[in-house]
Amino acid sequence: MTSTIPTVPLKTLVQTDRTLRRLLTITLVDTLGRGAFFTLTTLYLTLIVGLEPVTVGIGLTIAGAVGVASSLVFGHLSDRFSARTMLVVLHVVQGTALIGYLFVRDLPTLVVVASLVLLAQQGGGSVRSSVVGRAFRGEDRVRIRATMRTVTNVGIGVGTTVAAIPLALGTPFAFHLTMTLAGSLFLASAVLVAGLDPARVDVAVAEPSSDAPAPAGRSPYRDPRFLWLTALMGVFGIQFGVFEIGVPLWVVSHTIAADVVVSPLLLVNTVVVVLLQVRMSRGTGTFAGAGRAMTRAGWLMVAACALWAGAGWVGGDGWGPATLVIVLLLAAAVMHSLAEIMSSAAGWSLSFDLAPQERMGSYQGVYGTGYAVGAMIAPAVVTLTAIDLGTGGWAILAAMFAGASAGVVVIARRAGREADAAAIR
Image 1 (cartoon, rainbow, N blue to C red):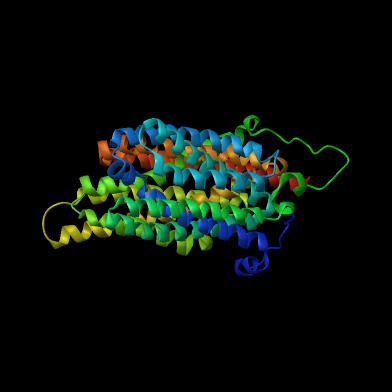
Image 2: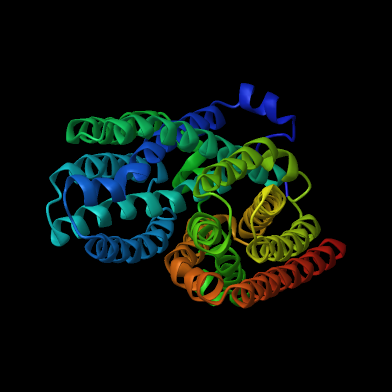
């Protein structure tokens, strides 16, 4: 498969490709706003608005279901309409809805506002994936997604730091001002999106012109291999929930480590991804490379689960045991972060290469839905296993991740054999 952009060093690609630079700028602006806003959301709704935690949980769960559907719908729409126009509209909707949180007073208004936010967020994710799939080819697509993930972590990290200001002040005005600024960043980002080159990102002009109608391409719903990939990567994607939800609860309730250790563990994840995502994504742009990466990701997650569980075994008083717990937790955080990096790169590669170019949006929408469903069920899965069952629960999670990664490896190897056979013919 030929590339629309030559395979050149990533730094050179960023310097010379205007579309890539704009996509990375959009990603940075978006994640600055997202990092600042979502750090404050739950505390704002409970402390400032005065909603009960259970009410907030119900509202955000309903909104999460809307986000799952949005990922699917907008992926399909991006094969039929301008991806650039849809991204502009979705940015405006998200920015406006984020500011709309200032008017939330009860469960119905929370459901409406949060649903609009997640509709735009998840739908925009599918559309952006289709844009990358159309604008770039082969190894470049994986490298660019890896770079976007790195920028995402930087943006969210900076945004989260900014959110510490209203948290420290604790006043309604500080919350309102920060949330308004976060929403305004998405409105500003809409202007940047409007400057994307339609010849690179829109399906209507991305394909060569012809007197004959363009082939419709195979539907992702009639592609069992891709559906299996989506389901398996969605299961493996529960690892995000393990780190974001399970690890803080585990550290606080099942280890002798101080509660403050949670923050450095989350920082380790951010730093590892920022430093290594691009580097460790190299070589995953082929079926064989993706399979190798997923194999490593599976073993790394098994090791991480064992280390998380091991930190709960160590007890007693004194410097020694506490130090050992922290060492185990830090080692687990590193292993878990490396598994995240490798699995993400493998998933990007396979989701692009197994999708027909003319149905890129539909396929990316389906693929994104797998992760969205995984994120939706992750809190229940993590609490019912690791948190409720302890070591046995971690063993269940390890087996689940190992099985999901093995299934993805089988898909990658079979796809590679088919591609080799087709090349020989």
